Length: 409
Image (tube, helix red, strand yellow):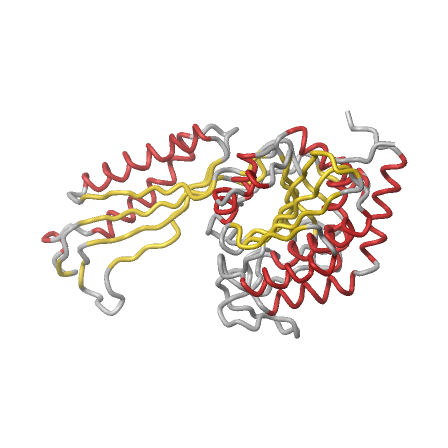
């Protein structure tokens, strides 16, 4: 059953969107400036500085810097100052990728670009900060978390280990990510997993080098690698229940010298990833990989070992907060534009660490290509954030604060 939305809440949601739309051009300029100045994980000095400057201009009550190395936290207190505290998180870092876009605000840093839209996420939270600081129509404190190092650096974990939730004990935390395959004006969420756990596997195979014309005198690690790659695919198809999603991908191989056509190398290395939602499935795949790799290598007279690294846990929404966030989104865009049973992605997200520590929800914000069509997807050298959705994202952030900590009348 859908939650009934009171008319006054709908009016409040409309006011937030209308107010933020008034400074849409300023948000666009801010976002494009961040796009020109991309910074990798824990290097977000310029970005953190621009965020701090923007929060100062917005009139937030407190600004804390250097949390988790380059993280920034802003506090905004409502008209009523209860102990209520809600966290909103935006990631700030870029990717090590060369941009191939023609527009004037493309990356000015060779080999670095905002190919995942974190510049847009940061800008939306800045927009929410301005609105919340100007209106303060809530009871409690909004904690604005500008996080470094999401792209493989576990910046969320670094902020938590640096005392984020000890210093700012929020009751719940929310984040959102743009999604180019969803149309602008749509929002997606579900009651459980939104993103998968991401594990890294590194397999080292040791054989015996030799001449390519005399393979019987060698133990070919390339052949062993090929059989391991093929056999690894059977783990999901023959060990994981169809109801449980999992992925095992071997994504890179290094063996020998491309200039030596007749030299069988002595070693080979494979690198790949495992993606799961269920911890039991994750444990099973790790165990099966260890057994399979050693057994295949032994069958060919080689040896092999695997280093299994658990990088990010699965991003799992808590049901109450997820449906609350969906209700807030419905106030903004209408129930028909909210998907409450969004299919999870096998991608990973380090907001998962915050959801392990606090209740909360991770949302997808449709952005398309600005013309109502699916846009260039994330982590692509021609990707760009759709500035048209900045006011909606900012209003949704603000709405989560206002509706979770309403003023009493």
